[in-house]
Image (tube, rainbow, N blue to C red):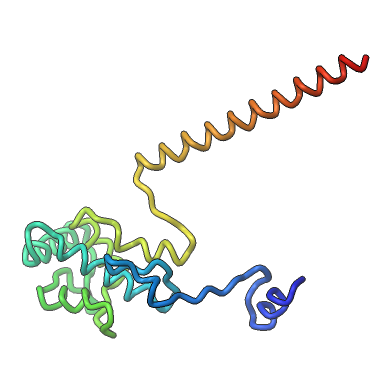
Length: 172
């Protein structure tokens, strides 16, 4: 056990846990953070939602209508009080990354993603867990690549066995 693991255990973190400190340079041009800790997840989600809302072709009022439509169709509460609709003002409050309070709940974020067809606001939450969301098409490419890698490993193992067999035959 090295000094890092000993210090991590002393601080209540599991062995092998490595602390990473983000910097101001970890913020990308699209407003999403390259590194997000737990405390930065909601601001990063809100920043990403803000970018998506700015790029929403039909405008903010139509975005509010689309979010409300999804929430009503799926019977989802968008607000703490159980409201199934929001106003433009509420959406504006959701989209302010640095603001405290008025955060959208998880179901509201899902309604936003469904209404816009853009899942990028979920990326910061996924990233902090060490995950990356991929499309079904990309998942197929990943599976294909994994199969190709396994086949290459199998071919390399077969080649080594054939070489070893030849060496043994030469010695016999």
